[in-house]
Length: 342
Image 1 (tube, rainbow, N blue to C red):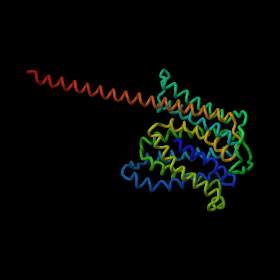
Image 2 (image 1 turned 120 degrees about the vertical axis):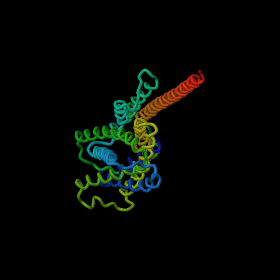
Image 3 (image 1 turned 45 degrees about the horizontal axis):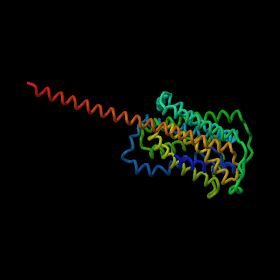
Image 4 (image 1 turned 45 degrees about the vertical axis):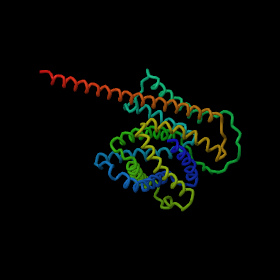
């Protein structure tokens, strides 16, 4: 998950550069999903040919709905960047782990015992990480002196701001993102082939976004991407990231659950701030440093709580299994004694 957050942090900068060149956000999402799906399908076909579950109509309907929520989330997210500011969007985007945590508790996918130190650690970890990302985006403090100038310059276009519309889109995308994580975890239980699931989700999502984008953008020139341009590399790199990191995300979600995956989103803000300082030459404020420390502390607390819970549940299962074996042995011994008696 740490590797995926580094990759997605780079996506943030290269995508911003592509949008500044006039790339439509809906067309970008369509190309990105389609490319990722086409890249994943050969691996899904050969690696999971025998282990892939049978495709039934209810399962395909669930895959369609899962992809629809995914493309709806990303389209709202990138549209909100157009109407507000990146700082505002990032600050609200980092509430996704909290939304996911709450939904997981409501749906009983995450167990929290407030009387247990492990449960308290998970709650505190979520709150501290949320406080950290809010500190990064809302509190500046004194600026840290830059060590060198910007290595890369990104020209930002001035766009019309609509804070009411942008705020609604941002909040809606955060909620649907959390729902998307929960649905992914539930679908994985029915469709445990992670590579195939990633391929289906990207391909179906790409087709859905393409249909949606055609209604909004009819000009063929908007769909034309020049080879080796910023737009080309943005779509190519983002597509590769979607292919590789969505698979890794599914694997981690199957092993650790949706809250574990969502919590790592907070690290993306820290990585973006650090890269912006060293690569783009943007100012680094003490508020960002303090917020980054809080994010790491909160993430550590959550991971510690989840790992302790996992060890406790595993020990309980082993104890229960051992008790069942002893009980079975006692029953067999009693039965043998009864047979020996005349």
